[in-house]
Image 1 (tube, rainbow, N blue to C red):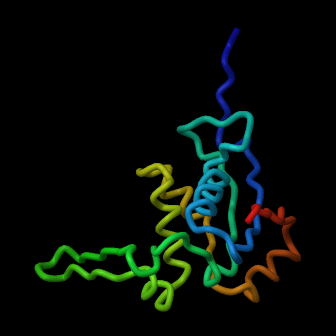
Image 2: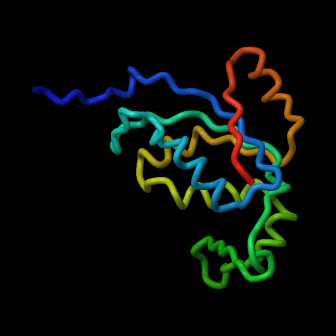
Length: 149
């Protein structure tokens, strides 16, 4: 008996629209990475891009557990001497709230070419009234994805 290997060009990706309002960051990021990789499919293969497209709205209203807003630190470095920048979660939310979720999802995806291609299928917006989503809703069928709070 031969084992069938699913090809990337036979997979038709779905579009998921997720409202991040009042959801916990880590739980949301793990669900998003699962959808991006396509692990919900019965024919999942680790080395093939069989993932879906995910659009996340209302990232400015994500919840955090514990005292993460004051204690969690994000680091940036341009590899120049003295260029290390440290920022708390609270300040990063004020500066760019969608970057918090993007970094959390990026940490859960595989590193390499496959992970970079999966990451390109993620669209994150801090608010819900985005013209791009409204134009895509007319052309494409979205699957509203609801998570339990």
